[in-house]
Image 1 (tube, helix red, strand yellow):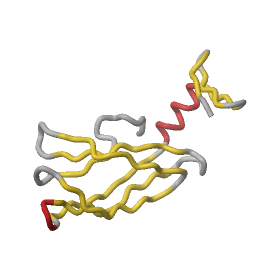
Image 2 (cartoon, one colour; image 1 turned 90 degrees about the horizontal axis):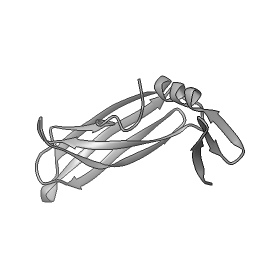
Image 3 (cartoon, rainbow, N blue to C red; image 1 turned 120 degrees about the vertical axis):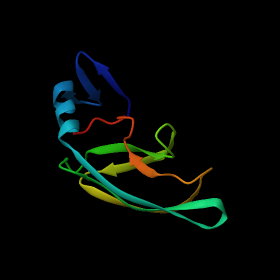
Length: 115
């Protein structure tokens, strides 16, 4: 299904939502995360924890970007996490990184509107 922005509304199929309502929904959603990083075998790092989205309708979907911060100046995008409705996604993965990260961050570049 194609979506397009036209005349101040987002149109997807027959449904239309005003941009104002869409922005209000994005800003009212809440996201929380707790992701720990530990050294693992073979030059990898183990990421464990969870990301939670709340205060959204059950069919509201967002794609949250995950970043890793190495120091105050260096950050890299790890990937994206899909959350639908009020949900918590658990993270439990080993990932190869060039050096030890200081933190794993969600939405660090404000890719997704949130409050």
